[in-house]
Amino acid sequence: MELFSYLGGYSGVWLGFSLLTVYELIEILFCTARFALQKHQRTVQHRKVFRRITNTKKASKHFMRK
Image (cartoon, rainbow, N blue to C red):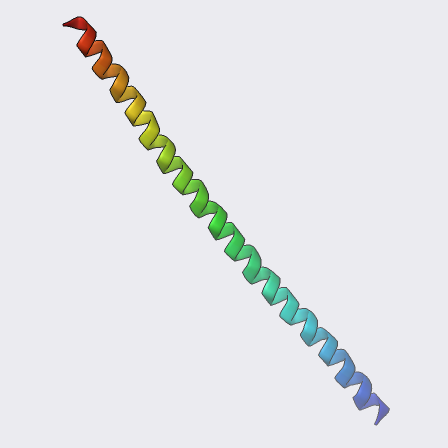
């Protein structure tokens, strides 16, 4: 009977560790995806700003020629 108690206790501990590991894995995947999405959004925003700046410079050069 004592053997079954030990086996049940150990299996409960290992199951708990397994669930924590799965939770941590899900959390890491979620944080990584969120970071990648934020980085992509910043890159897109920087491209828009850069295009505006270069278009403004081209327009001002064209305006000054006339």
